Amino acid sequence: MNHDIIHVAKLSKGRDTCMLFLRKMGSETYQWFEDHEPTKVKGITPEEAIRLAKRHFSFDSLNFLNCGKRFTLPERDEHGSNALFHQMAASYSSFNGIYYDEELGHSCQVKEASQEALDLLAQLNTWKTTLQ
Image (cartoon, rainbow, N blue to C red; front, side, top):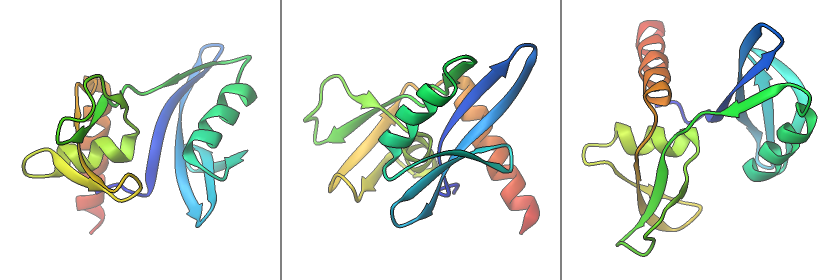
């Protein structure tokens, strides 16, 4: 699985588009990477890093991948919350779609991820298999 990638965004600067990857760099550091190069944007939580990316790239078009909705189980959560890429990867890589989220302390399931996010997950899994 690709747990080293926390979340993903597409950044458009004029006619150029690149991928931004949020990675966990230490116990309290989450940093955005433009392809493989680190950016200056980092936070102590994924939420802070996402908020700071929105501010830092405010003059460019920044779109986060739709990784679906995360639901806590048993059905405590009717509407779900936006899932991060690593949560989607854990759910869609499990046998029944359910994974244990250690931060929440509950079993969760992610539903309704975009085809773009699922295609990226499949591509990363293919690359990881090829490199092994």
